[in-house]
Image (tube, rainbow, N blue to C red; front, side):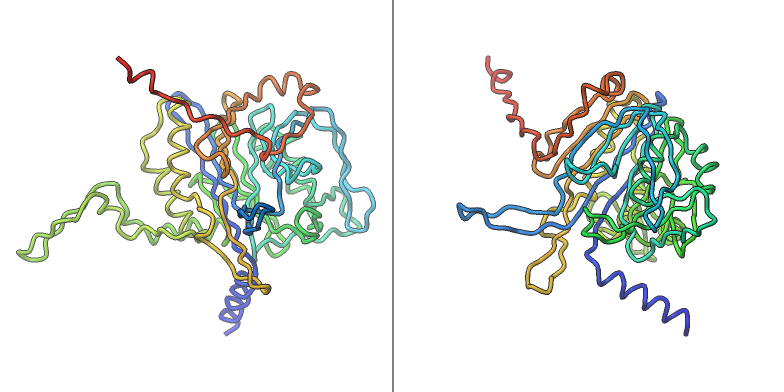
Amino acid sequence: MKELLAIIAVAVVLLSQPAFACTDIQLTAKDGTVLVGRTLEWEGFVKKAADGTSYIYNQFDYALRVWPAGVKTTSLRPDGTPGVSWTSKYAYFGFVGNKASTDVSDGQNSAGLSLEVLYFPGYAEYQDAKPSDKNVMSTDDFGTWLLGNFASVDDIKRELPKMTVWGKPNQVMLNQIPQLHFVLHDKTGKSIIIEYTKKQLHIYDNDVKVMTNSPDYAWMSNNLNNYVNLSPDNVVRAFGDARLKPFGQGTGMIGIPGDYTPPSRFVKAAYLVFFAKQPDTAKEGVRSIIHILNNVDIPFGSVRDKMSDGNYAQDYTLWKVIKDLTHGIWYIDTYQNVGSIVKIDLNDAFANPTQYLKPVALSEIPYPDVPKINDLLKN
């Protein structure tokens, strides 16, 4: 009975919150290039413009910015006194919630370490900071600490257990404690998932090379046991003397979930990561990740929660990013500029960080003209 009540309690928590969705994957090309891709989903609302047209509004105006090496940061304890301090060893680049924010939510440092922060509702519960704890840090500074100080996931696994991480209400998150878990990838192809549940730290080796949202990674990976029948090979069956003829391709995938819930996206992404052709090169790997992420891209209006005022909070894919950890290249695809990939070379930014300290909002990225091929078709 206690177990049933616990399940019901978790379900109530999950149903009382908008279902924010994110998907994270990793591929390694045959030439050794390590590539990471993720989608970022959040709630949006339909609003009317002055001219009567409608547009999509969300609370974020995501921006990109560079942090140089050598920046000193002091985190806070819950009582507002200073916590742990550090000076960053590495420059890093990434997303913030808006141009005024400095809390990195997705980034990569000059050593090739990648961080993706994914929503983890109903499960994230951070540690209690006791007066005797020496190394105390708030969730606001967690991404900054990871990207500023580490080159590999092995280093993180060794040092993170020495830290106490507490949940701090975040202004960008409407002063709520952000419910998050964290995915790290490095240039060697190793990946870990960091989760705080029931006030305990858990570090998982990300063997599947996929993560979404709730439940936790242990549940997600165990759930794959329900899909051992999936195969890229088409299936032909006979029932007695009756030979069954499939309607088309993909019979080996019958049973794969197609909805947008986190467990379903996890299964579908894991299947595609495992069975899709291993790319030969970085360029081919970028294309592969784009195609895989397109399978979990959420169009605005297809997932929604009705709010108390009658309006709908509608989950959609704000942006996708593909990271080449080996060569320091990013490719960004936004909802507004879908299909028009923006390429960013991090090497110059890391070599000359003072020239790249101006944050740039994604809404400021101009939509490029559609290239014309008429001239190629002329005689």
